[in-house]
Image: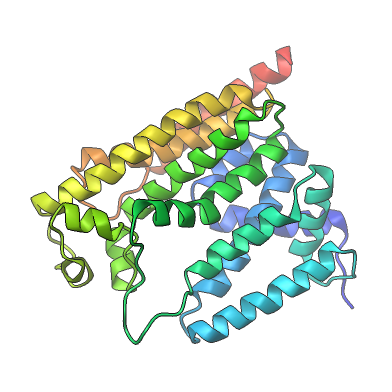
Length: 302
């Protein structure tokens, strides 16, 4: 059995994060090395779960089966069994080092699996109410926040609810950005009660002309989600001071990049159909520069 040393395992995770993490990696750089290694390990774990879930070359049933097998392998590794998987090796060390409950990683996998829920025929994936969507966002994003704050370090229990809501802000931003792409894959994350309230037909979203700007009804629906996201970004601002000082710059970088993405969507008047919104690399580098300066100050006076 090929096994990896801890240093080798973390190196694999850092490479995955650098290659795949479009927004997260800029925040990782602003962390002290031990915490950065742990965050990269968690990201690599998430990436593997997402890749198994998104493999459209096989059926949903087969993807669920592979995820269940992978989760069982993880449980054995987490329990101390030898593993050939460098990501498992790194994550096992991270959860021990930062006292991360295994249940949070199981919740993360549950969120990934929720994208594979069985449906009838060609029925699209939908969420009936915002409360249903919130639960999905909790599993795929808030859980990540609850893991991350344990790596960042905190003492005030209020940080946990604020981290949950920060994850909601990030995921609602992702949902807005990806409306067109998700619809092409038969997924509409905008809640059905919201569609009805704004007189937007589900079928019109699933089969709309992609390059056309939003109708007034679609605009109002998207703007409602944007307003909800803004409310949760207020929680993110309140979370940052509760985090260990040496980790605050990294969280500030991450929040700033995601909030900048939402603002670009807003400045485009919620036209998420004509083009996919993104934060330019130069802007991300500028945010990272501020974050690195804050990190230097935190280390100097910490």
